[in-house]
Image (cartoon, rainbow, N blue to C red):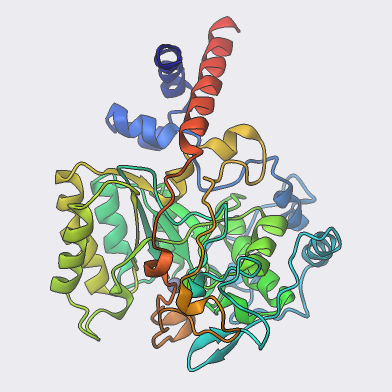
Length: 429
Ligand SMILES: [Zn+2]
């Protein structure tokens, strides 16, 4: 099997380079070309059913979207928290169909108690039937870890006009692929930075429209927060539909996550390390504290790989990433974007979510296992919504033992076989 894989890889790689090289990548070295060229794009396939929800303006083949950044463009979207009583019918119908099919668990929303999402009496956020990220529970199929040796890079809360452009330039200059979990209203208010990220080939993912705690929302409000962000990105990228989202504060449960995947086809990416860089300059978060934490992770075990929560929300956070970058290289990490963790499997197999690494549910720690009103295992800090700091209350630290990605080997083997078949087809035809 091992030899067969090697042969198939050898067969597949030349045709991949030939078939998928994108013009804007011209000039990159071969490794970069291969990495970028693998079908692991941040956006969904053209034939993904979720596209049907965003085709309303495309009845005419000559339709063109308003130019990004113009008043006509901005006027097409909510200017603040979207009104869930004014949603496109197609979205509501898709949600209702998913509910009727039993695909959206009936979990009550949380309310914020002392800043923390808290379920009503009788509902335990740490129970697998609810599985809130805030309560330290990992939903199978969501991504919290990277494969061994892989550092998956992502930045939250952009684009921000003062800070993002410099970061994007640094990423481009160093050929660093990264996934940018963007906030809808920040795209609206920082159109030039958004276009810079897109034209530079950076990944764009959904971080909701105004950055709420998602578990506090009704189904329709979840629909509005995700749907409008996808619409905004779709209409501003010539029709590319994001494939990944990250709930603000890591706050998602089986209900909100199901709406994301069942209605919109989104895979959830969380993180396994947190720099607290959103709070740079406060609470002891400094260039030194971040570099110290980074050094520990980057020189530590390679299993599981790293998904580090970082932000493009302030200059200190951007500088901290740039300062840590040499350590990422010198310690031999394979840098990919967060969206590239799946390595194209979902793209290849034609299913919505089939490529997601199977992550076993992590039993909650004893501190949250019995009380129906157990507090999240890490307190959420100050937050200021879409334009401000995002706290990071997801208690990844309580995620104790990490799963060894049992399906990864199987998937990579299958992927290799598919590549081989693809290559053989290219040779024969
Ligand atoms: Zn955020």
